[in-house]
Image (cartoon, rainbow, N blue to C red):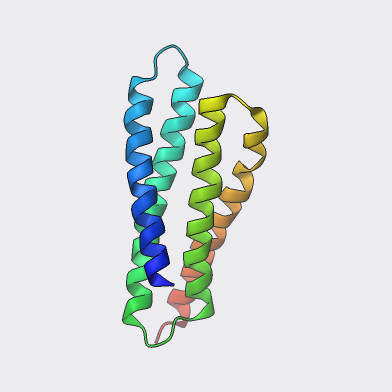
Length: 122
């Protein structure tokens, strides 16, 4: 589980840096540039959060349900939120925007589960 989270965090970090650089060079479409920057920012922040969750999980004898939900919530949120914004910005296909809120909810579930996990920590 932690290896998967670290792999997802690493790939997300790489992708978000590349997209952030591309956003800085997109000329002529400020909306697409904003979408790319937003997706990159959220992806990077949550890649770091996912690394923190993986580190916490490695330090524990048993990964609790709340911590597992936090990790998978962040992982799913990065993919659904950031990647849907990237796809929308790059293609202009409005249907990709329908996925974005599900990613946002997954990220919020991740933060909520992390807070619950902290409250249960011994």
